[in-house]
Image (cartoon, rainbow, N blue to C red; front, side):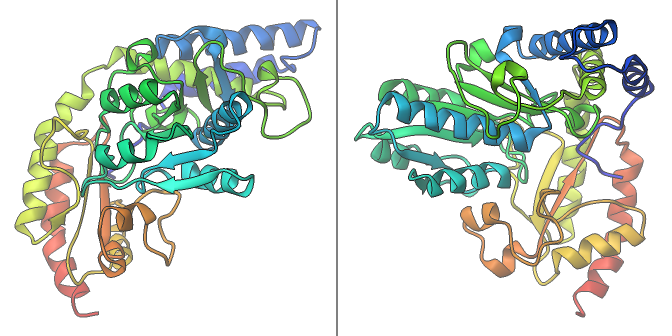
Length: 376
């Protein structure tokens, strides 16, 4: 099972179970409420520590999708409130669907959504960015620190220099980056950043948004003043506790990405030998070592995934948010693939438990599967 996420450990499960036993609403003043609040704030501190961030700058939410919406929409609105001319939102074509959806929601509010040019592995074209930023009407630029389909690392330094020069916000989707690349918000210099627990073995349904101190954003919906009025609704204390436990385990195993490097090379060379055209870079200095994407010409990605599933191997056609859809990934179209090529795409992700034997199983069963698939 090639999985980008760590499976939940006994420690994570135990932390969730213990928090559930506490009960209580963390906004309530009674004893049970105070106990729940203590657990929630301890979890917030631990998540903030993972980002080298101030605790009060971290907003707990339901995952990366909500964090991306709250972060991108909040920053765009804040920029426009400060300067009415700031009405443009810039996104590369290969961002996660949740960021694209947030951009489209802003477009409905009167913002101008613009899609930047990118290179074949998903990195932003700096010349295109420079042209668009000249008139100083950009409100925010959002990007993925690690591309969710290709594994590509987005160079943040050049983007940050443009953001500061032209005075627009820079937001980073770090859901795929957490646990795979160092995340220090002070060093990164971003204005906002999103993460999600399930990518590091925490529970599904909890994530976090970090915003730089002094940036005020408004909640997407009404109904309460929780999370400093940024995210109303009773907080998921038990899930937050599981998130914190997963961060603890992440710190105890900081080098798993390095351990995956020989497996990444073995898998990539084996796929190429079988005729795969790779979408991911072959340079581990600009990509993470747990993700590979490509296509087998003439073979449907959906058919490949289904056939491998029957053989006991789990891969996908792309992001879990869009896998199985009849339409091709907009991110793959954005890096220059045709619709037919994008529908042939596969993505293989590895986790800390992936072994060389599993790579060998995949490469052993693939030839016969490819032969059958090409008949369709």
